[in-house]
Each structure stands twice: as structure tokens, then as C-alpha cells.
Length: 404
Image (spheres, rainbow, N blue to C red):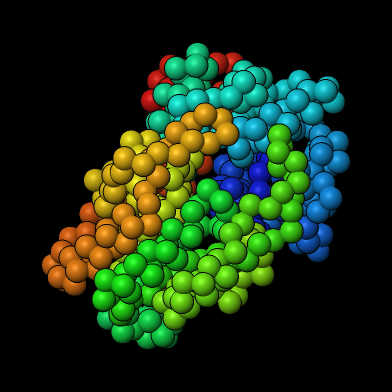
């Protein structure tokens, strides 16, 4: 079966790119013939991944609209879109206008209870919408969308726990061996809320806690504007370097020096080593559609602190999460409201974690629970479910699929 995949390139370090990198080999191994429209894939020299032809896009046409006809020339039996609902709508309408009549599956995240009119139209255009989470499934179902749910996965051969001795060696190599280390893995985007951690660092120092480091795995500067459907050309990043300097926390807040832009990455082993070196992952985003860094952290046996949002993040981390509640709320452009943990609340929580996890038995317990929770997520399970949906895509999925 020929599959046309539309998502971020497996060569870029985004959540969708990570999904492509892990799913493409498994889809190929199941007998699928995959051609991908590689979003953010600007390097025309790399146009093959695991025997998959990748159609690169241009910076001027970042959604690859000019590549869709080339994608259709592969005569796909099905189109699988893995991206934001709003993006999926743009591609779906374009494909239908070009005469493509075979099934289109949309594998998409849902962030809050309100789906915009454009999102609802998109979900009804798709032959089969699939949500990343049970929460997303409920939101779609509440809007009379016939849909399914498949969790994203984690590569347990790559993301796995290590001994304290091994962790100490990595921390020493990184220069973090004498510090309690908090880590946050997320691209620098307005919704990821990195400034909260920079401000929390200042507050921790003012509390008298100084032997800590906060490592944020992102490019900490503002990048060139790019086009966002419904919003036009805009930049979404924070100037974290300037804020770090303003608050005088340069020694305590660290950024990588091996990321070229918001879509670049480091070698898998380097990212995993940095994650394994963490005493705690602090995920300050006020909402997620899934949150791959959450499950990757859990798989490494690293405790995860995040907002008690009652939605996707809480569903993913389950009992393994250190959940932070708040009365503060924030509303997005769609009208969705989110719990918005303030910097002082993060600082108080991080101070408590700093003191509690000095106790090695508590740390061991947190690490064990985290790893056990991660076993729910596996790319092989994700792939098997997607393959089942593709092969049965001629109509509405069986009712049992509605529950995974």
C-alpha cells in the first residue's frame, strides 16, 4: 500500500519530526511504501530516509503547497497527515481541490475543550480523525466527530534509565556534577513559557538556593518570522538570553550551544545523556497536545513536574507526575482556558523538589514510578495501530477503536 505522509521531516527536532523518524521505519517494515512531504525540510541534499523519498519544502513555501502535486504523482492509496488540526485543514482542502479522492487520515493533537469552526470543518473533512490522547478523543466525540485515539510512543532502547554511577559520570562530563539539575526540553515558542523558569531561577537564588542549574534545551533567541495559518507572518520566540541577563541568572540558566535554529537537533545520544543527567524535568507549558518530552523523560526514569491541567499532560504522566495546581488561568485565541502556573509557584515547587529529592530513597521511588508509567507508550504499538487504521480506511473504524 502506498502512503503519502505529510508531517515534519524526520531530520528536524520537533515533536512531529520525532514522530516521523520513529514511525517511518515501522510503516516500511509493515509493507507500506511511504513518500513524505517533509515540513521544515529545507536541505535538498537529504531526500531519503529509511528508503522513504522526502519531498523538501522551500522557506518561502514552508507548508509545501507547491509540492502537493509531486506527492500525488506517487499515486498514494491513502494520505496520512500528522500535524496540527489547522494545518491538516489547509492540506486536506488543497488535496481535494486537486481531485484526490482516496482516504485522508488526520492524526492530530487537541489542546482544550473548544474546537474552532475551522478545526471542526477540518475534522469533518477528514475520512478518519485520530487523536493523540483520550482527552482529545473526548473533545472530538463531544463535537460529534467520529474518531479514534492512538498514543504516540517512546523508543525504550534509546530512552532508558541508568545507574547513579553512570549518571554521575555524565553530569561530570557536562560540568553539572555539583548541582541539582532541572531540565526543560521544548522549542522556544510563546506557548512553552520558558520565561517562567528564568524568573523562577531568580526567585530560587533569592531563597538562598544556589547550587542548582536549569538547562533549557532550545534556541534562546528570536528567529525570523514564518507563516502560520490564520495568523500570517510572525515570530513566536522569547528573547531568553536578554531576560537571563536582566535577571542576573546567567550562571544558573543554561542553553545548548549546538543547536543552529528552532528545528535543528543534536545527536540522539547527546540529548538522552542530558535528559538522564536531570534530577527533575520541569515542563512549564500551560498545555500540550501530547508532550513527547514527558514520556521520554519518564522512560529515562526522571521525575516530571508539570501543571495539573486535568487534560493531556495529566493524562500522560498519570501518577508519575509531580502535579502543580493553580488558580491562575490564561485564555488563548480560540477561547480555551488553561491553568497558568506563575513563576513564584514554580519557584516554590522547585524548592520543594530540590529538598525532597536530596533523599535518595525518595528519588529512587520517583524514578521507578516514572519508568513504569512510560511502559504504556511504545512506537511499535503506535505503528501497529496506525497500520490497522490504514488497512481499514475504506470506511468508519470499528467501534472498539474508539477506546484505543
